[in-house]
Length: 249
Ligand code: FPP
Image 1: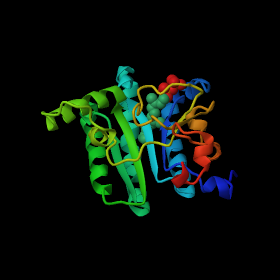
Image 2: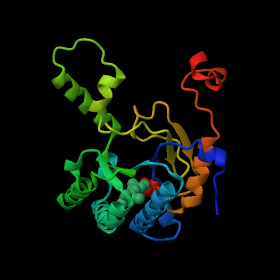
Image 3: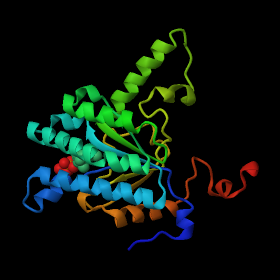
Image 4: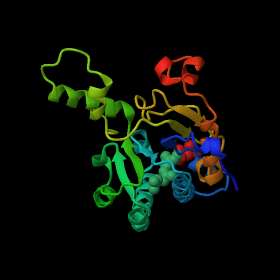
């Protein structure tokens, strides 16, 4: 059983965003249909969310369905939406008991009505929960998010001619209210962000695991957290500046 050292525990990310890749390949290697991979992928969502609670990572964001995933075969898309519905129905009780607040980013109007309804209902029912934060990216694309944010910023600030500060602009992103991700994990050995949180990831550490998502369980997640905890995040500064007390840097 994997354990983090005390030092690692003191340097955990606050927000981990995960690109859950490889469900299809995982199923294919077992000569099973792709949905079998997605079903096992959902089981793994539970394992990773539990591990995040176990060690104290308060924000988890999952790339569950991208705008590009709309191009997948109809059966796969409807299967994924049913899995999402099943997951939210089953988890509502434990989300309320554990104090997990659900949020969604992405264009929910592009989901089938039954899926949109349960997502919105769960968001509403959990909105007072304060212990943990689970965000699902659903029909999400970062470029689309940014273009919408620019349009809305322009509507709210019609006479502004200058360049807004990040603090002025970022509330227009769908991630308003969430801290930027500290760590982005992608499974299946792919080194890409695939239109996920492109601006929010400006200073994120990236961890790529060779494991397919259904195999990336609790221990692999804790390994990734340990790896993150041992890194030095410099935010553009030098190593010496980072190690100095703040008032001298
Ligand atoms: C990538 O594997 C995975 C997806 C496109 C969907 C991820 C969704 C889930 C795990 C289930 C829904 C989530 C929740 C929270 C209920 P892939 O199909 O691209 O795999 P491949 O690259 O091997 O084909």
